[in-house]
Every structure is written in structure tokens, then in C-alpha cells.
Length: 309
Image (cartoon, rainbow, N blue to C red; front, side):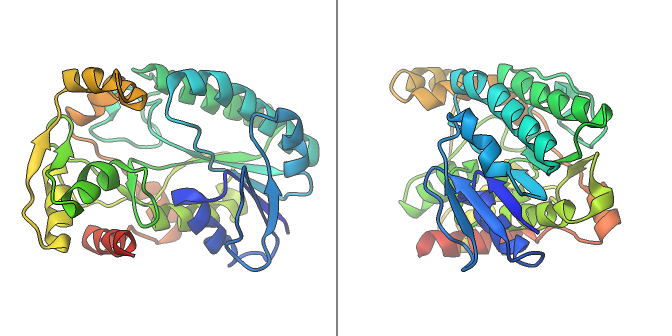
């Protein structure tokens, strides 16, 4: 049973490949420069801008996982995500492959952020969120029309080993390890639940191999501990044995830094998420599969261990 990961490697694709080994010895890894995770992995090099080859990458797959992380740029997302997703949907429909889309929370209404569930209102307050809402609609419309079997697996902001692109890594762990202050956005005394990437990968593999999980949306297991942004910084500092010194980064500084570091210009429109509690509820998954999230103390320990290697 061939299962294919579009967007192998990285903080989600790599642990997902490890977890899929529990279900099949036929795993195809697709990315620009794929590397084997398991000895039996099939490597399929592909630049995802080459839409014409996506069908070939999907061909023969029973399940296709989309864990692609295009550069964090509105212009890039607008130019790549819709056309890429359409090519994936077309390929899955042609070859009878099931689709698992690893998604985020950007499409939810601002009012949903303090307690997000699979039934939260879809009303994106950002341009990036509008793109995510469009991708969701593309998938669910095909499901509704019975042309596609698919599910959407959604994670909150995440952290974990071998995942250097998360905010907890870049702004907190990396800085504290260098003797600098941890940087933080918004109100650091607000709750901000985070998804541990190995948990997300394991749960995504379970969903992809559970027939009655399809044609639904799922929140992946995420801590129920009501930890604030300050609390996460303190956990990292405690693990490193340093003082939890914090530098608050006001929104206007993001615009200023963005003049020199283009990626920083992408952050301001998302800051509504950091000015209120951010609670991501995964009760649906926990009740269905009896699996809960890794304790934050354990997750942070594993994160720091990976950074020290």
C-alpha cells in the first residue's frame, strides 16, 4: 500500500515518514531534495512549481499527505497554493488516492481564537487566512460532490525537535541559548497552546490509516495545559538553566525590521492571534483515538536536546 508525502522532510514530513512505517513499507517521499527516513523509502525529487509532474508523484498512491511548507510570503502563497492544491486534487481524483491535508488555523474567525474547535466559524481576518480558507473549500467541495475522499488535519502553532521554523525555536530557544533575551509578540500573559510536532505526525498517520476518519476535519492532539507565552519561555529557560529574560517586540518594529528582513513584513497581519488567549481544542481526536498530547515539559526537553546536538 503506497503512501506518499508531498513535502517530505522538515518538522512534520520527517516524523510523519517515521510514523507511516507502522502501516506500510511503501512510502514515497516527494520534495525538491528528498532524503530517506526509512530504508525502504522511495525518493521522488520534484520542484512543486512543476505542476505537470504532480500527477506522476501521486500515481499509484493509496494515501497522499500534503505537508508542504511554501515560503512564508503572501505573494508566494497567492501564486502557488491554489494552483498546487488544484493539481493535487486532480491527481488524487484521477488515481483514486485519498488526500490528507496538514493545515493550520488561519481561516478561523478572530473570535474563535480563544477556543478553537473543528466547528469554529470560518472567516479569516488576514490575507494569508483567506488563502487557507480557499484551500479548505477546494477540498471540501470535491468531498461534498463525492469526487474526492479527503480529510483535513489541523495543528495549532507548533514546536518540537528538528523543527527550526517554529516561533518557540527561533524567538525563544535559539536566543536564550546564545545568551540573548527571548523575544515575544503580543500579550505574553495570554494563554497560547502549542502542538508538539511528533504528536501531530503520529496523529496524522493514524488518521490517514483510519477509513472512517476521512471526509472530516480533525484537530491534532494539543496540550490542554493553559500555558501563557511567558510560561513557555520559562519552560525553555528552566530546561536550559538560564534566566527567562524577555524582550517584547512591538508591532511597529516588525514593519521596521521588514525593510531589511522581508519575511518579518509577513508577521503583523497575524498579530491578532497574540493579543488574546489562543486555545486549540483537540477533544474530538482524543475521544476517538484515546491519545492525548505530550506533556509540555517533556516536549520542551526533547526540543532542547535536539538543538544541542
